[in-house]
Image (tube, rainbow, N blue to C red):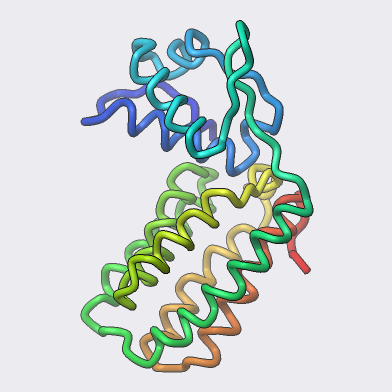
Length: 221
């Protein structure tokens, strides 16, 4: 399912277009070095050029694209070495965060995050990568936010936005993506039961998928 589809209605076209483009870039639907132009994207989204131009300039600031003089914008490339470094830093931060959260996870939050985990699973099964990625970010950053450390949240958000999974779109039809999606429910079970070590181990394994997805393979190292 393409992320670049006409916008029916959205309170912020700029935000909607930006999220759709980011999802397409992160998932590999828009491959590294793909050339993007505002008129073409505006036609694909069936919107005026203004929100597209604003959205793509936002993405340039975030490092998703780079300007190409007199041609448009090019999707930036993340090397395997940089991806590995990003994943290594995430593994230093996110698993311990989930381990800590398991010691004080508020049961009142369980329905909210169960609903998000359901959205992630549905996105994986239907091939809606934009929905999958948006719910995934909301799920993980939301859980981290429960620890009350906004600096940690911002740091992880930045690392996640820079992690490309260009093989993700190729895994839509496989059971691998569905299995990874189900890990969100498993993580919630560990958090709700206070299983700190299990939550840490699962989060570490979950992050390693990013390395494999970068190459279009089922597992990372």
